[in-house]
Image (cartoon, rainbow, N blue to C red; front, side):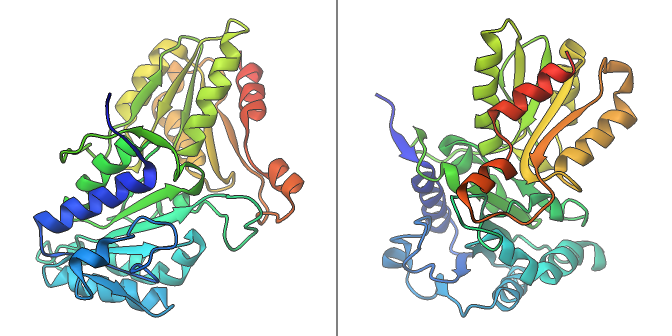
Length: 322
């Protein structure tokens, strides 16, 4: 029987193997020694204070410190426990880390990984529930990764750590305990390659992370009504795997994009714009976006349910263009 790990265990194993392989890999962040969510748990026992570094509660400071470490040849990993606090380090990530390779004419590399816990987890409200991936699509020089399975988490993490550019590595809270087959040996999944989870001929549904799982559940319900949806896990938002999306649209001619982030300015808006500019002749219907409502995340469980995308909303979007 193949070995199974949770998403958390797969990430932690990826960290451990990278740190054993390369002494330049260090981890910084709030409570990384004890690890509230578990991705860095037990690593301090092996690597100690010089490589597992607890920091004060000041994201701008410890992300800035990590950028400086990257400039001097280290390969730092920074953990941000809640995605909202990325905004506290926006200048460091979007202006400094993203730009320095360009600013120095290629003389400096910034091999920085920012591990981010994101997404709703049940009544986390506006300050502990947001999905902010799209906020970092605009600055050039950043890569954005959103794994959906333990297998992909470990493989994409290795690629992220070995990349010479800053990578935002988003981990959705709803899949942290999800189990899946994960090889014990090291392996890489290339950044920028989507994966077709389910083949179909009637409509293409795109998602990332938890949204991919929702899309799969919606596709299974649609199958009972004779509708064959192709589900694609983007895995990487930046760079975007346009080839896989285009090949799917050549079959289906219809596109639905699912994301937990808010609709206005979301990654669905960017992909829809690409579709309008580059694939219009392949579309037989308008692109549909299924996303969160443009409001702060509610605390109330019933309101949170209304705020978020779900299988019913995905099915409704699919049927509206068939």
